[in-house]
Each structure stands twice: as structure tokens, then as C-alpha cells.
Length: 263
Image (cartoon, rainbow, N blue to C red; front, side, top):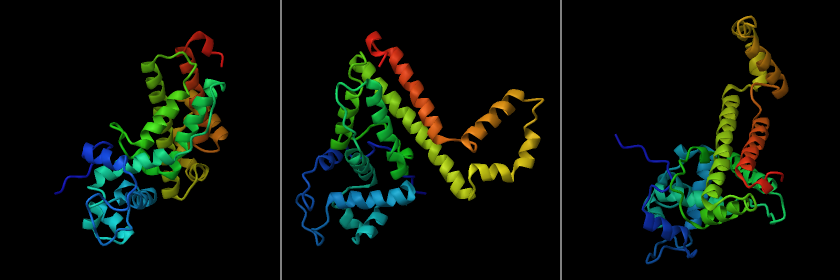
């Protein structure tokens, strides 16, 4: 049985990946003269993104990308050596194209950090496969580097040293990714069940009432009912994000220099 392909960043050939990430945009690979010279690495990445955006990483194979482009898999391999390198190219392209709201040094750091959190959160509905991809050794392409440079600047004025600034960014992005995964899971459950949270609760209320024994679980019953009414269901991703981000910012304020905490 063939081993399952890795869905991790940085799993391909580092030298070839870097060469492709910082390519000059030529129509065909260096030293290659094939029958489809109109094909480009960018076209390969775009086709791969369309497949992954529509069907997740399981739908992404080199054969499927080749079919999407109307070429043979062997032709495709002359542009990108394999799925591992392709995943790095896709990730870097998403990061390169993502929205980067402009902010100036005079804006409060909370406003700047909120802007980068919002921009990252917006990536996941457009590219749900990002939650499937294990991003540990991020490809050092133009997308990753421009994103990192931009996001580090959001913490200017908070009074953090360089290591703490990097850690603060990792903390914010980890919070956003965790919330995005929970939101996508909730959407998948709703889609697969063909019911909203409210509809599911109404349909199963007689069964659920047997578990919600107010005499045994008074606190859980009271709080659960209050939350369900507030959320109009079992879970409100927007509320969870806003509440959590505010706590993240409060924590960063406590970490920063005293003069920056009031912003």
C-alpha cells in the first residue's frame, strides 16, 4: 500500500522549492522546450488552488491538476516536481495575494493587530484547506516574507523585544487558526445535517431535555440556555472570535511596556 502523501509545508526539495518560489515568471522551465510553452508555474498554482478550494487537499493530486490544465502528468512534472513543492507554492501564493490593510505608525497597536487578525481570518472561508495544511516549516517565498514583514510591524510601539514580537504574532495567528477550524467544522456539520443549530435543537429537544437535568446540573443548564438564546443556536463563530480576540489583545497589553497598555 502506498504511503499517504504529506500535507505539510516544507516537505519538498528545499532548493527546487526556493527556485520556484522566487521564479522570474518565465513561460516554461529553464532548459525545457515542450509542446505547451504557454503553460506557466503560475497557471499550475492557480489550477491547484481551484481544486483545493473546491474539494480540499484530498482533491489535490498532480494527475487532477494536469487534467485541469489539459496536459499529461509528465508535462506537469517539468514545471513542478511534485505535490510537496506545489503545496508550498500554493501557500505562498495565497499569502502574497491576501489583503493587507494599510496602517500607519500613529494608529493604536490594537487597531493594527486587529487588522492583521481580521485579514488572516478572511483567508479560511476562501481557502478552507489551510486548516488541513500543517504549516511548520513555512516556505520562505515572497508571499511568506512580505506577510511576515507586514504583520510584525503591527506590534510597533508595544514595547516588545524581537523574540517577544515574533511570539506575539505566532500567538495571534494561532488564535485565528483555531477559531477558523472550529467555524469550518460547525459549517460542515450544518451542511452535512442539512439543519441549522436552531433547527437541530428544536428537532431533538425532547431527547436533549432528558439529559439537561436542572436539579443535577443547575449551572450548566442555566448557562447553556442563556448562551443558546444569545447565539440563536449552539455556537456563534463571530462572537467567539470577537470575545477571544479582545482577550488576546488584553494579554498582549499586559505583556507590553506600561506606556503602550492604554492604547
